[in-house]
Image (cartoon, protein in one colour):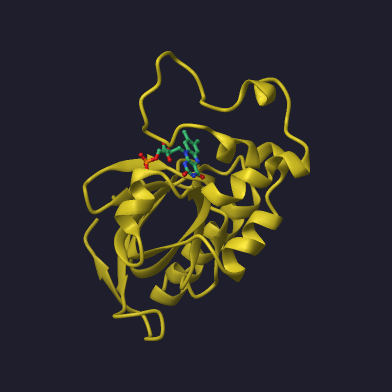
Length: 196
Ligand SMILES: Cc1cc2nc3c(=O)[nH]c(=O)nc-3n(C[C@H](O)[C@H](O)[C@H](O)COP(=O)(O)O)c2cc1C
């Protein structure tokens, strides 16, 4: 079957949407890069069909949240070893702490997942000994819903508007690779084939 640029773009969108729903999918936890060169894995929570929004959840106190702020450069790398497909994306990131998007995301977050936002030390902050910084009361149990409320102040969403996408599939013949770019999410994608 002939491979087309439109088909490749659709494949990328489909893979990301599937990864959001399936926690065992390798693309469920892509690597997210920031302009300081740092990298970390994050859970992909949403990927819209136009790739105008990749949503992640994070701690507002984390270094990456401070760095990205209202418009930092973000890269996202995902790989599916079964399909041997790599997706490399770049775009503009935005941290939202207040407002309807963050509120909706928080309301859909289960108490067991909200627990990490109760940590008394910010991510990356020094501790006297090894530990999670989560209050002892919740070390061995999930907090009840009302016990998670203090965590809301530390919760934020990272929204990435994808501006470029590099799709690579390896195979025995050497693979195929396509690159797509657009100036902003309102503009159409411009795609081209490139050497793997
Ligand atoms: C499998 C996995 C999933 C993770 N998911 C998230 C996540 O969804 N959000 C997040 O902020 N950190 C997540 N982390 C932790 C980050 O990789 C990172 O250690 C943390 O966010 C530290 O913040 P910084 O990158 O700002 O220093 C995850 C780590 C692993 C190993």
